[in-house]
Image (tube, rainbow over all chains, first blue to last red; front, side, top):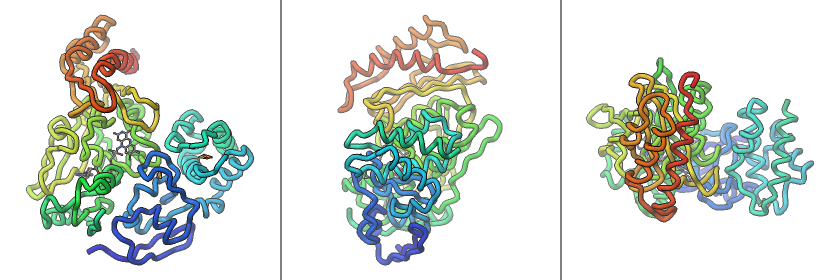
Length: 158
Length: 280
Ligand SMILES: Cc1cc2nc3c(=O)[nH]c(=O)nc-3n(C[C@H](O)[C@H](O)[C@H](O)COP(=O)(O)OP(=O)(O)OC[C@H]3O[C@@H](n4cnc5c(N)ncnc54)[C@H](O)[C@@H]3O)c2cc1C
Ligand code: FES
Ligand code: FES
C-alpha cells in the first residue's frame, strides 16, 4: 500500500510529512505544507523553470515531480541556497548585475544556475552553460543582466 | 486527478507482479513522470495503481566494445554526461541534448521516451538510425525487439500487458548526427528532424526522419542513394529529393506538409556534412 509518511531533508533540515496524497507535486508540498513560497509556479507544465529546486544537488522541476517520488531526497530551495557556497556566489552575482525586474523567475534561475555550476563549473564552455539555462524563462525579458550574472558567477568559480 | 496507490518495488520480479495483480487498464508505470503526469492530469488515463520504477536497479550505462547499453530509468542528463557518448555517438549526444531542459533531463528517461513513443520524439529517430534494440522483461520472461518494431504510434508500442523496458541496446557506436527545426532552438518541440548514422561494419548509411505522425521512421530509399562512406553532392541531392518527394511526411497542428518537405532537404545535407567518418 501507499506509505503515508514521507521523509525529506529540506534546506538541510530533516522533515517528516504526513498524509501527502499520491498525486501531490513537490511544488505544492513546498509552498503549501512547508510554507516555502520562494519556489514559484509559472506554468505547471515543465516549460518555464520557475519551480526549479535542487534534488540531491541537481536542478529539478518541482511541478513535474510527485512528492512521493522524492521520498528520501535532499531538497534545496531558494530559502536555503545561501548556505551553499556556489549558491551564495550565484546570489551575489545576481545582486551585483541587478539581474531581476519583477523577480518572479529569479528563484528558478538561481537554482538552475547553481545546479549547473555544481555539475560542470568551469569545465563547461560558457556557450554551453548559457544553452543549459534555456529551460528558464523570464517574462520580463531581463535576459541581458541574467546572462551577465551567469557569466560572472561562472568566472568567480575558478 | 483521482487518487491512486503508488508503489515502488525494488526488483523487476516485484514490479511485474504488481503490474500483473491489476487489470491493465487500472495500472500505470511511472519513470521520470514528465509525460505521464500530463496523461493523469488530462484524465487520459485513470489508474488505481501507479508502479514507480525509481527503486529498480536500472539506472545503468555500460560500454562493451562498440556496444552501449543504457538502463531504461537512467536520467537522460546522466547519459549526456557520459564522457564517451559525445565522442563515440555524437548523434545520440545531440538528440539527448535536444530533449527539454537540463532540469527536465535530470528527471526524464530513455525508457519513458520510448514508452510515450511521441511522433516528435527526439530520441526515437536517432535510435532508429543506430539500429537500437529494447530489452523487455515481463510475465513470460525476457525478449529483445528492434526499436523499429517496438514503436507503433503515439502512445502505442509493442509492450505486452505486464511488460517493462529494462534497457536499450545500441549495438554499435557510429559516426552520426541529429539535426532539427523548431520555433525556438532549445526547449521546444521539433517540427522536423533528421537523424543519420554511418555503420562502419556494413559501410551503409541509416537515415531516419521525425516530427510528424504517426511515428519516426527510416527511409531506405534515401539510405541507398547515399551509397558508401563519402557521398558526393549529387548523391546527397538524390537522397534529399527522395525524402522531400516520397517520404510519407504529413501535416499536423504544428507544421504543414509543404514546410516539412522543404525543411528535410537542408536538414539531411547538413546532417551528412556534420557526420565525421574517420578523418573525412
Ligand atoms: C517541458 C517538456 C519538454 C519536453 N521536451 C521534449 C523534447 O524536446 N523531446 C522529446 O523527445 N521529448 C520531450 N518531452 C517529453 C518527455 O520529457 C520525454 O518523452 C521523456 O523522455 C519521458 O521520460 P519519463 O521518464 O519522464 O517518462 P514517464 O512520464 O515516466 O513515462 C512515459 C510513458 O512511458 C511509460 N514508461 C516509462 N518507463 C517505462 C519502462 N521502463 N517500461 C515501460 N514503460 C515505461 C510510462 O508508463 C508512460 O506511459 C518534453 C516534456 C516536457 C514536459
Ligand atoms: S512551473 Fe514548473 S516549469 Fe513552469
Ligand atoms: S524578472 Fe520578471 S519574470 Fe524574470
